[in-house]
Length: 202
Image 1 (cartoon, rainbow, N blue to C red):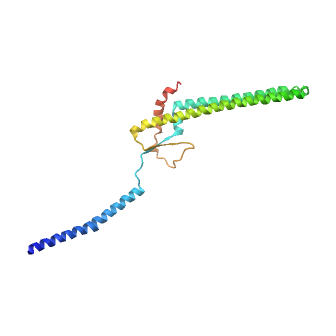
Image 2: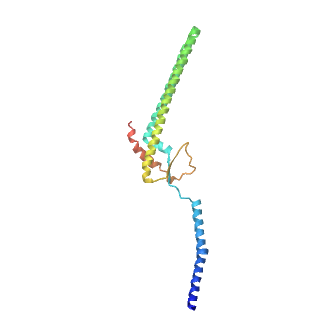
Image 3: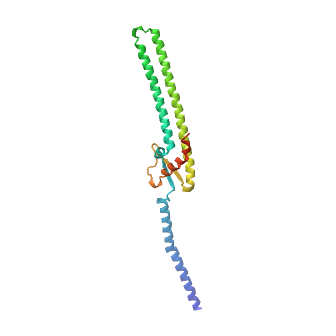
């Protein structure tokens, strides 16, 4: 009976010891671990898998884009040149007409002025029409480049598995800090040059 009592007391003592350790030692460790986990999550969030493309660099290094931009700049210069040539022609006509001096009648002066205004309006209208056509061409070109870029990145990202791919550049630089390690512009330039190679002859 005495042995049984001693055994029971030892069992109770062990149980109390276990509860004490569980509540005051392990419990504190658990609370600390929970707090540490929360703090770590709060202040050191897992870094999202993000990359970015520098559009300025991309546009400067993709052959097709450079070629098309040069072509459109040449068209713009041609439009400006034709408009300026037209205006100089009108100026020359006016100067030639005025050389007649006092021999010009009021009726002739009025007719010449009306013709000059009409011709200038035609020159301005031609410039505006050509400018609008070039703007539409530029918009279509930019839209096609964006579509090609999205298509390329969708294929490229099948292997890379980025969560987000951002673009940055002049007038679009909303990233206040950029880690150079996240810059995939060189990959994009290489891939887009391959993708758009067939368009160079078009």
